[in-house]
Image 1 (cartoon, rainbow, N blue to C red):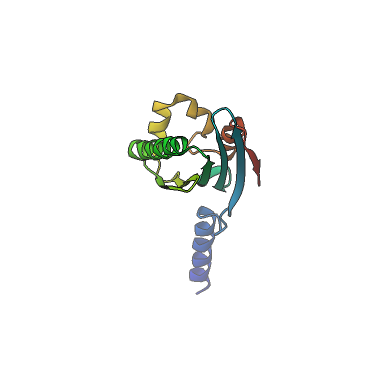
Image 2: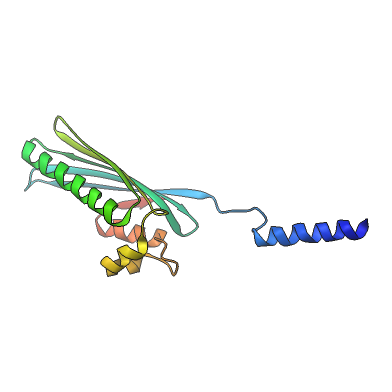
Length: 158
């Protein structure tokens, strides 16, 4: 009986080591914000990027981009551009869900990029600079996405 108990205990220990003893890293979030006023072209942009990550790898990003302007032509251009961009990215790489709406003096884009569904390898082939933002397993890294957003002028906080 003790021998069976000992084998059972050993099996549980080996299983625990193989699975990390059930301890998994917790998903965390970082929020990046960007505000830009383009007086020359007559619009204001406010963007929020909520980055969900586990360890050093990004799982998904939820974005809200709001463009305000008194010029309806500018708003229509942004609406078309955002829809075209996100639709093209989703068709080429997958992982995008988005909704772009225009109301009054505002265009609002709400987008989720699920990196578990996105074809990162194809993205890197098409955009070689993306290699700077991934790890050896082609996972988008937290440091990579942070530098990407900060290069655009965003401020990021964990």
